[in-house]
Image (tube, rainbow, N blue to C red; front, side, top):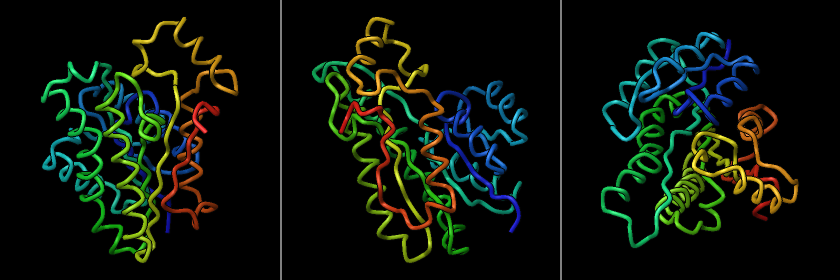
Length: 240
């Protein structure tokens, strides 16, 4: 088999972009999924010799088309990184039905749609690596982030269940659960808040997207072939 092919959802920026670069550095041809950030995705794809592909992960029809387009383009898919996600900080009592549904539509339904679309190809080939991206708040819960925490806890549960179901087909399913990472998603936090979080972190700093990408890269590597159903948490020790 030639080069491996990877699809990274939400791959145009932040953790997703770092994962794209990491997998490309490791020799993969990478499909960079984006929803609205076309210019960023196409620029990144050009940098790594990959391909930008549009699709809203909350829409099952768009996801199926996206995966079909990747398979038409590359004729195979070896690695799926379900990274696309959104966050929101609100008091629980202020959450609307629309808030709740949109967070779950992207963070949970998006993972479901993407894995479901790619799974027949993986099962047919009896191989594949699926990586989901959760959050430390899915492990311990975050104040004013009830919907986000619940959605990421669902991703962790889905990952573990699928690992048991898909193991006999030679497919590994693992989760990366980042701590506080310096990305646009955390752009609402001011420098003082970030400094305080860094002080609470045993390693004394905020994480970088590359720290998360390194964990994803490991779980995609041949050395991780006997690892499945696990949650790898690059969080600097903030949650132990």
